[in-house]
Image (tube, rainbow over all chains, first blue to last red):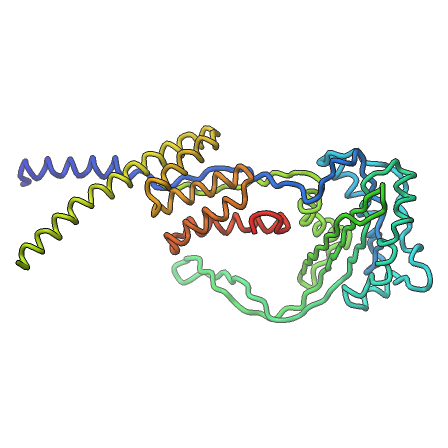
Length: 249
Length: 117
């Protein structure tokens, strides 16, 4: 037995709760515009000139990168992409300073391309290239793509079922032999009118697989490149990053 | 005399409470209106409303959080960072504000620290 007064109070309380306690948060999609890092307004064309590549013979880092960047810039960039043969920059270092592709894997990432610094700093050379291509923005740099092997303890989730058939997931540390690849590209953006370096950007990505898993190097190369392409493209053109945030009341 | 003091204190506290509640209430209305217009894509109007809410009640962490999101959407990353930091100072343990801020930081770091730092 409930007193009529109490029932009325209860109803009011329920209404108050229902009206006041609507969801206090709301997920909303947003698009964040990111301004380009480089002012490309003085240029109408871009020339992906070629790269000094090292690390493995399984992938031609120069040609694959040239092809990939040209196609990305064609689809997502604002500049006209020049189709011309990629430059063989490895020959330019000359003077015995060049690091052959296979030897580079043995030296540290930073040391691999030290001999090529002077190539990218050679203003006269790049100015000449620029004149031939009608003074575009020139993209060049170095690509280190090398295999790696690592062993050690890794944490994994182990799935078991208890006596009642319920799924139980527990973290477990196991020793694993793993192998994979490291990709360390360094992009150099050169003004084709003056031969001066405008901007340099270096990335480092790596991937590891179980040692018994066989993944073609070229597929790993594209997987790693895929991770850093948005940042590369954002150097030259504005990008919109899609995501969602939570609005609060 | 002490009883008089207690009564005065209680009365002043009671008179201050509605004023605070009014400000929060007004700010909440602005926040809710801002949410409604943001859902329709009118982010500049939402920014105006949420700025108004933070002026009405500078302790309203949720208003600062929403303001930060709107600034993020408009690409004003410096202002977004400031608003997130203010929201986190007001409610350091709010997991939703923390999550929004973490997602913002990821994007802000991508801009090569040219903006928002």
